[in-house]
Length: 285
Image 1 (cartoon, rainbow, N blue to C red):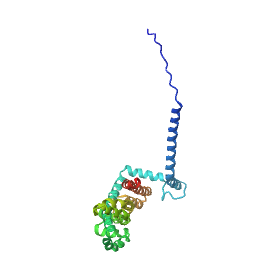
Image 2: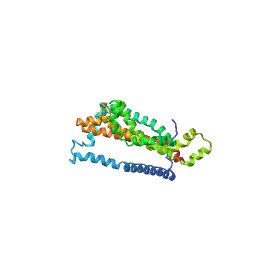
Image 3: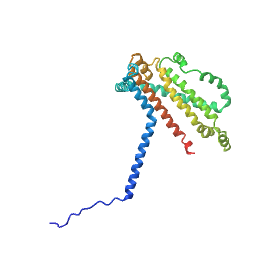
Image 4: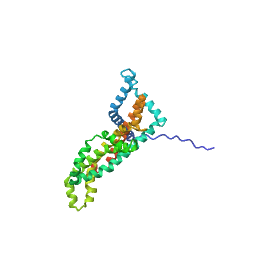
């Protein structure tokens, strides 16, 4: 038999410095979580209060639940729309129309705005016509678009394109005209060609102002589309709201409104993210 004895090993004494470091890390993480929660609550407090009032007011009889159902009832109806696939169908139809009109407006407005902002004679020629059309409400032209393009997709996309073109066009013109003249003189002194001047000086300097118009156009693309979809559409969020209202399906109507708001917010934050990426040089200077 072996005569070896079992040996017991005791853990080493934990050094005070290690304990202090662990406490500092734990304290930092706690402060970070608390600051994040505090910031999130500050930004969402008004929305949470609004939802709470919406939920409570119909239940205690302040408003008729038939006209303003509780928020939870609206969510249940919305979940049913998601499960049966109706919401996806309407959302897809609206997004296709909205993005189509939005992209077309960018392709039209930015090149035209650059030309008008840079060439004074071209600006003088088009300015009277632009003043007439930019003061004509987009919805007022909906019957005209339907008359020429029919009641299908073309008239709806044309309306969105028209509404989105103006904020992009006007901000592009403003962005080009407000470029620092010293930058232009310096670029010309360095021997840049007109194309290089546009690409390396004018366009980068005008991008922040252009994106103000692009973000406004993003909001218009949703707002105008909803109005257009209430006339002659068979699918879309505007059609969903109109159909639910006519059939007194009030929870579905409110969920359609919430869906439009969500789409608009996501669209705006996406454009804001792209703007920050394209204008990162502003923060790096």
